[in-house]
Image 1 (spheres, rainbow, N blue to C red):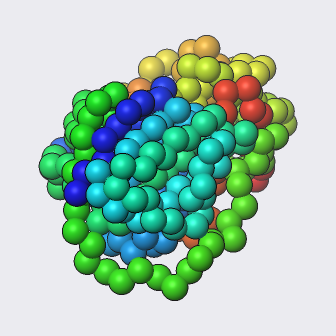
Image 2: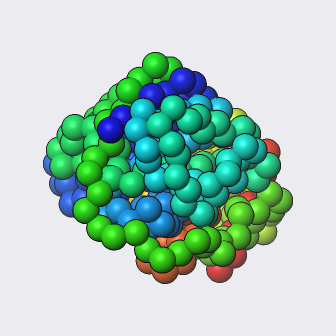
Length: 282
């Protein structure tokens, strides 16, 4: 069974749960930016939790089923998506087209059986920073679909709210280098709205606002970096790292966005479109 990509849109990648536990080797985890939405897509079509899905950034994807397939979209709701949060049967020869989402940025297309491209270092995730994993999806690609191994759930629709389109508030914890910015720097971080810029990607969100000034100068040796870290480069404008974050970094980390297993604020940030605003709350 295969799925033919007629149009890949601005950025479509294959993603799963990522390369876990290899940071000591310099290998980032990668995987879906909005892990909750990707996991929901797999549950709705009866896939294992680590099955590969398509992560579609700002719509634009058009695919054709070359055999009867059960599919679903989750995350950002795209114009034209008839399978959002509700699995449907896509008959052989039928097309699925995703327009631009009204709110949210990333849509997940789950296919029963999973996208069965070859794994690289134990994962089918495309890491755009390191270049590991399958290549970015292009027009004309033919993607293999695996065999289903689990029963379909008895669910017609998952009642999940769409990502918000306005300002978003997320929880933040002090980072290991918060003292490099002092009380005034922390107050500036949590006391204003930050705007997501168009320079953002799967590596991280670049934020614009009133810069955060250091109270301590000097340079740091490279330190470990994780998803959710708020790193402040010399510009004073924070970068919030997402799925393809580097394994190490040399700029001070002022805080971490909360990444609780059952409620990940980092996943919520992965759905922010350029121009949206975010506040950090303690």
